[in-house]
Length: 537
Image 1 (cartoon, rainbow, N blue to C red):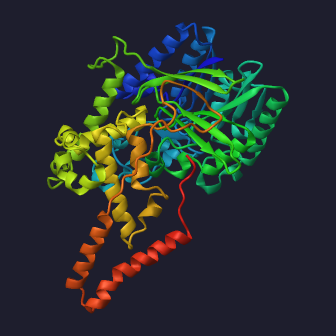
Image 2 (cartoon, rainbow, N blue to C red):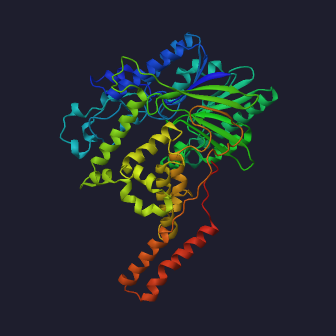
Image 3 (tube, rainbow, N blue to C red):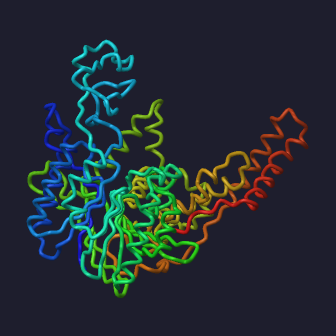
């Protein structure tokens, strides 16, 4: 069984782009990439099924949805089957209107988001912030468009969903389709009518939806079929760093992964992160769920997934297909991939360079040689390896790690100097965090160490994230042996703090010298009693 998986198309209608006479080149490019990708898919003879896992449009306005549905209808008429999910960028539960991109002024209130808003009789000027209080009324009018509700989307995309479904859970806007007689797919939306399922502030599935999912899985087993699922938000974080930077609303509760695994789902395709990633979660009962995350077609990395599934052997052949550049696109680089990398790095460098008081220049000027004395012993770099990277900017290395997260399969494997340096630096940070007794940093890191956060950003130690051939119903073996990076820097920091306490504290030298060690011991005892454990990813 072969099919394509796309995600996060973030389509923008023509009226949204050109309605005010001005438009962003990035939005124009996004629109052109969508057109090119779907034109190419129409021509492919090796694919007859396309799954799209949400964030179809950028602002959730009706114009963009109707225009995007017309594109899908054209693809469908070429002989392809298309099935879609809608997600957080696509709908609004109660908003009557949505604002389009950046507003000309800033507002104290946003009344156009309420269902009873009447744009014909609205007065905008009193709503603007003090900065724009002197602007005339005409300059204060925002660009707004009619928003789509979940019910609107359930109707607009019915030809690419429930009309082809053999079962649906209308309250959760989810449905099940038979790709073949023996391969079924659950398309699981994350918006629902019965809000009882909205526990832990997470847009998870409602109780009714969970019961429906379980019934479909049981039916599939009875009829000898294999069933997998598509959802927008990943059930397993691509890397710990993403989980720390995201929110529970966008990462789901980890319980959802374990519950679906125990129900019998072993394979899920998702989007949302714009990352290329293959990750695994396991439940207390030992059930394994593989989560394949698909990047966006119009962000870094601009790509989609070509999937070949063998349900009998639980084997998955996965290929990441890069979106191709067309002559019409205003892109100077040779490929969209290099264009988005340059754009990403330039944006971050510009933000850091704009920091006040010369901080930007200072941060951008930090090089490996400036930090190496801190982690010389922990990193284990040879003189030759250190010489290779001594003049590398730390900013460039961090940008590489961020790009590794998004594109998958990082190139800094354990034998590379950059990996040794960064893991040594992480070991120093872990040592300091473990020694200091005052700040609950471990809780902020949700039980992860800095080393556990940094390592997956350097290289991928599991199934390849892009081109892979693997069995998805069991946890993969590590490709690289683990190396232990350790540092005693925390003890040195504590010694300095104790010395400072002896010199500066108004208390007696004995009390001052005992204060920090006692607090450290208490902290370690507390950690032993109630450890913060990371999830099984």
